[in-house]
Amino acid sequence: MESGRRNYRFRVYPTPGQAAALERQGHAARALWNLLHAAWEANGFRVGLDWYTQEIKNIRKDAEYIWFADLPAQAAQAVWKDYFQAWRNCWNPEHPAKAPVFKKRHTRMGVDIPQASHFKPTRINDKYITVNVPLAGKIRVRLHRKVDFTQVTGAHLNRDGLGWHITLRTKTGPIIKPTAHKRAAIGIDRGVTVPLALSDGTNFWHPDFTTATERTTLLRLERRLARQETRRKKTNARTSNRQRRTREAISAINSRQTRRRKDFLDTASRKITTDYALVVLEELDIGNLTARAKPKPDPKKPGVWLPNNAAAKTGLNRSILNEGWGGFRRMITYKAAEHGGQIVTVDARYTSQTCANCRTRGIRESQAKFRCTTSTCHMFGITVNADTNAAEEIETRGTELASSDTTVATAPPAPTTVSIPPAKVPIESPPSVIGNSHLHQLHLEVHERYLRH
Ligand SMILES: [Zn+2]
Image (tube, rainbow, N blue to C red; front, side, top):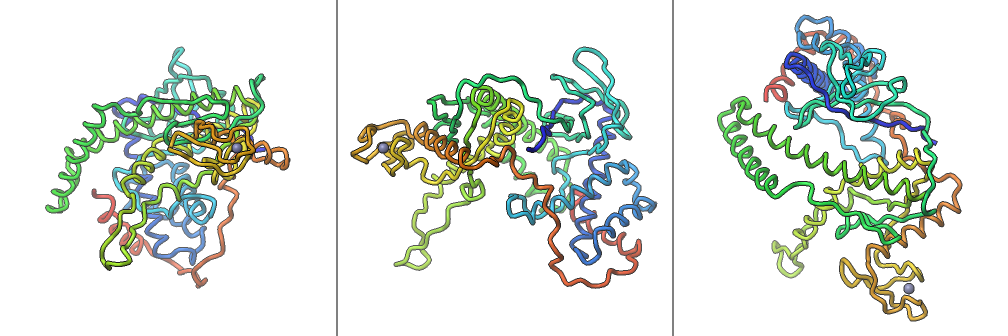
């Protein structure tokens, strides 16, 4: 069983000077990422992974790369690791990640502190501690919950629209809290009409994650950003401070929305894992569900397109993305482990059209209603709540699976176990020396394309 590896996220309060140092580190990390990516696009596998490590060491010594001094060696190593992990994820058929791309200036900024020994936590008072961040010094962290610092293995600092945050990575064995579960098993249907419908009839609702005012503001800001971007492109200018401010304002609203969603999912998953021992989730192919509706050509009139329900599908997509399924599954998995429970995922096809009582297909009368059409079933002809029925069917499938399979997955597969597949490009002898001039040229190109804006 996967041990209880989990992350804790806290708000940090750097001084203006420290914030500037963190920004510089973030930009340097991004520049290094882009440099690696440019080198990869030029050389790929042919040169071997060690070549890239050596390149980092070389450019560290190179006076041309003054910005590199803003990035601690450990953090540079972390960029290297992240970059190649991104490729591994991309090659892993189980992982939804796409190929790594260049990071633009407004990509979410982050700084890694790979080793816990670096940031000696010191308590200031009940609420605040300081941690030692390389090249930035002691930074204040608001500790809103307890963390066992002996278990912390590393950290990541990142900035979203609300400011800087630190994510502490911990490596602990599963902490089993003595839990008296109320019920053995529960099925969860992650519906569109109800965010989370449980097989015992419980529904988890949440208010909109954005307020009406925020939505109006967001719309206005997005239009402004589009205008500013058009103007910038026309004049081939650098991003103005005004445009940067627009982006930051948009980011702040989005971050608030993310935080509210996380709160909801946190609360729901905590309640569910304390109440139920076996939690059954549907395996949901998000990639497939959120795909855009295909254009439908009219067979009689070439060049004419039939209605394809694009608007309806887009609405559905939005609510699916809105609920943050992936995050929910991760949260509920580690919480179940803490409470000595289990998570099972089942194939969810036709759960919304199957009677949970007799297990035959019935009629989904509407998004909200389901009716069994098998005359021998005691639910025959009775209209029931479609989401609850689907959740019951999910629960049944999960309990069947759990009793037939002793190796029930308690954690999603770790992407880290995937090894790099053999080279797709023909192996040639590595270029003996790629001089600084070559790398320098590469850097100039990257700078021109991705760093200026
Ligand atoms: Zn039935």
